[in-house]
Image (cartoon, rainbow, N blue to C red; front, top):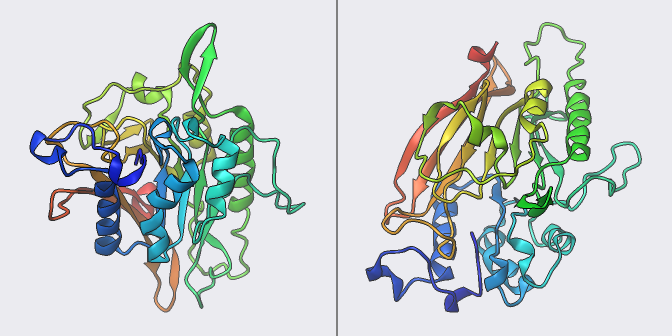
Length: 336
């Protein structure tokens, strides 16, 4: 969202006819409209929530940028991008602050399931998991039917004297592999007549794209690819890890504002959200946009089942919130 200081922070890359009355408040209004029309169960922010160099007071900008989510009373989660820490807070301070805000389900560190203590030995701030439980009254009501993995992709780094973007580290991937393995072990039911998915599906969210998106080949592109992929020089094996885990069905990224497409890499879907905030760079005349994800439960003869289908679409801030590029990312019946 690249939020700065509110009404005094002007928009970037908008039409000349829009510039004089355009500010951060346009971002706020867009978010409120999206919440109103979609009525989501969870709101996810994929980094660069505030544009540090334009935010005089990080705490104040955080309160303003997340205000529509807080006012809605809907749970929300966030990760950091590469610009959030450029104001008056460190990355750890930002995630700690975000985790304490009203209705936020964000976490600074993941929890150790055995010790019930924060795992502070993992790289980054904002690595955590959210469990979506099964329908109340169903046999899955106390089990996770969908896991949402959040990862800190960092900001900047120097590699062999070359400045590049940061990357997801092995300590994060190791934690993720262990977490995934633990969740896949939950499907041990005594009633063998119940048809349940062999793997608990998951989605992942982080800010900076992985190198494989730049390298390709990408198949089945849905959306607009109009910006060179800005990623790290280091390939830390994120895609390889997701594929080996087998539960991640898609991952969602930000960073490249002028890309809003989904694509398939070696059978794994990834999706950009497209530029949302008006103080972030964009293309004049190309409306700001947001991505929506819908996860659907299967329906048995008498009870709700596990996750059956995951689909996505986008909406434009064009006055009527045009819905477009709807697609299915995963369907249990076609994935077997």
